Length: 418
Image (cartoon, rainbow, N blue to C red):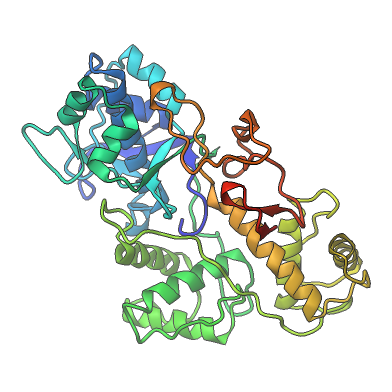
C-alpha cells in the first residue's frame, strides 16, 4: 500500500454478498476471478478491442481494491465483494467463455493508471443502457470498437487522455501492508517512512497533527507525537505506538483523503525522503543512523554486484566498513570506510535515485497487436528492440542495467546520475 509498487495477487478473496451482510468468502486465483467477472459482465461475441478494454477495466478496478486495502482497512477479511452495488459481478461456478479466458491469460497482469500516479485506476463501468456512470460504458465500448477504435482508444475515451498502460506487473502472494509488529520509538526503516508519509499528508486536512520534518525513516519523538495526536483524533488508544489498528486507520484515512479508490482521485505519488546527514559514522557506532546507512547500501547492492548485501542491524561492524569502502572506491572517494558528510550525501544521492527507479515501474508496453501502446517509450541513442526486455523482480526492465555512475534520461538526453 501507499508507496510500494502495485502487484497482482496470486489469489483474491471475494465476499459473496454486501460488505456488512453475512455471506461466504470465496478465494480464487486472480486470473480466474477476472475471467468470471468478464464472462458475467460482457458478451464473448463483442469485438476483441471492446473485450480487451473491458477486461483491463475489470483488472484495474480489482487491483485498486487490493492496493488501497479498501476492505481490510475497514476491518473486513476479504478484498472485494460479488455485488455490482459496490464492486463487480462475480458468480460462483459460472461457465467461462473460451475467448475471454484466452485474453485474460494474456493480460491479467496489465492494468491502467493515471500518468504520474501509482495506484491502479479505480476503473468504474456500467452497461450504458439500463445504467450510466462516469466511467466506461460497456455497450458504448462495443460501438467504438465496431467503429475501429482499439482498446486504449476506448479506455481513453471514457477515462481521459492521461491514462497509461502498465504491462507485466509483478505477481506475488497477497500480503497485508501492516509490517506484522508494532512500530514504536526507536524503530527505523521503510515502514516508518510509510507512517511518516501518511501522517504528513493527513495533517494537511487535520492541522492539529504535527508535521514530521524531515521524514527520515527514524521513529523519533516527533513521529511519536504525530502518532499520538492522530490516535486521539480518531478515538484510538493514544500510546504513540503504531499497532495494527492504528496502521489500518492511517491507511483508511489516507486513502479517503486522496480518494484513491475513486475514479476522480488526487492520486498516490512516489514519496521522496530526505535522509539528512546525522554526523560522522565509523566502525563501532550503532543506532538508527547506522541502520539507515545500511539500508541505503543494501538497496544499492541490488544495482551493482560489486556491493555485497549487508544486514540492517544498526551495528557498524566490519561488514559495513567493507561495504562503505567498496562504495567509496566505486565513486572515486577515499576508501577509508569512514562516513563523513561527503560520503553520506553521495550514498544518499545514489540511493534516492536507485530507490525511485526501483519503485516507479516505468511503463514500457510490449506488443499488444493492434492495441500496441508504447507508453513513455523513448528513442534511445542505442535504440532497438532490447528496450522491451524481461520483467525483473520489481517493476519493468528499464532497457539496460542500472549501475552506479550511469547517466540516463528521456529522449536520449543523458542527465540523471544513478
